[in-house]
Length: 269
Image (cartoon, rainbow, N blue to C red; front, side):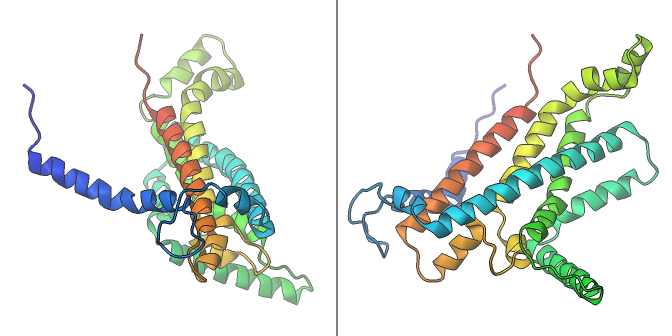
């Protein structure tokens, strides 16, 4: 029996989608606006995209953003995968508590996490200064901050990917003569690989788009694209900033679609 959706629910769904995505569509459209300032449409042009990459501050922020995203994704993917495999394989008494600790960086507000990391770095800096060592907020502080919240997403994604499989698959491989390393590389890793890749894409997207944590943990001489956008928007929204925001939206959408495609269960032939 096919149940039909009430027309009012369909209308309400379209209203919600419009509320969520119409501002993004407007942003993308106005990135092609010929007017330098204001929200008045004066004509179509693509000149803001080449002009965007002609700016030295944009190129520098892009380099910082990609460096942070790539390195933090690599580190968090390795560590998060190990944590996810450990939670799946071993029956721990404190597994529920450990899972709660992994969820905590996801559910707490970003501003709380940013302030807490800022205070932690200040505490570490004061301790090092007593030893005669100094450091400034920059690449390493932002990198560690991103890894802190990325590990949770990767580990939970890997664990959810393996949730439908039991450890008896690895035990069967061991019974058939496979070594521990061989059973891991030929049984466990292929099963977990879609979750690992999806978690890595999700971590890369989160690092690429993060503003609040980066804003609190970066120094005055270190800027990423979200921080650069915020700094420029305070002086007024211009089409080149719209173009930069549109590119970030495009990369984010592609990464999320790819991540969902990897986590989608495959149909048995």
